Length: 274
Image (cartoon, rainbow, N blue to C red):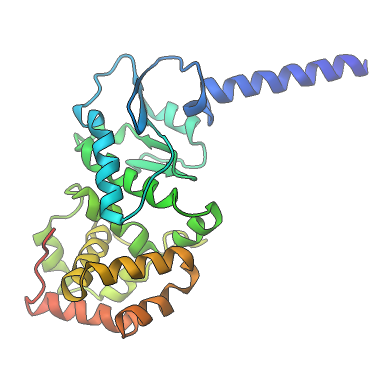
């Protein structure tokens, strides 16, 4: 009887493992990928449904990785596996932690797996924008221990602002809409928003993405790229101390600089360069 139970248990584990690789969370590492074709590049592998045409943006992944490295002054040492999910059922099996159809893409620690969701096709969005966004995440995450990358997610304005900036994304509010709305908005709660909090506040993320991107652009315009890269490096080492690192780098508290940013928008002194 015991032997039968052991065999049954072993068969169950083997079956679940096989499912996890072929259809579940381990799909990117599976030798067999039912329903998906694969393209291998120098820096990445791309998996896409056999019944769908692969957008030309995916053919640029090596270039995107190189540009992201140059943008962040970092190096991605590991192959990035990118999956264009054929439907929401596939995405939910590959990444069962998230439910809902609002997300466009996701990058998993340690920065070697990216999923692009069906939302991009459904909404006729630009796949290149979202590929660049997620590749920017991957490059940064590959340069941090997993536990520190999780801490870094709490610095949402920087964690998400960089990929939106690098991605040159236009899928959110337009620059004109942002500037007009920002003049009537208290920007501090937007800039201090923590998406990784246990119970994050409800904000308009489409507006916030542009706010975070433009704040980074503002910092570079006023203080230079070298100072920003030094601050960015310090935050990667000590994510939980980002407030003190910011004041040390920029000579003023974060809240004060956000106030300067808001006033620069209101009186027309800030104009985005990106």
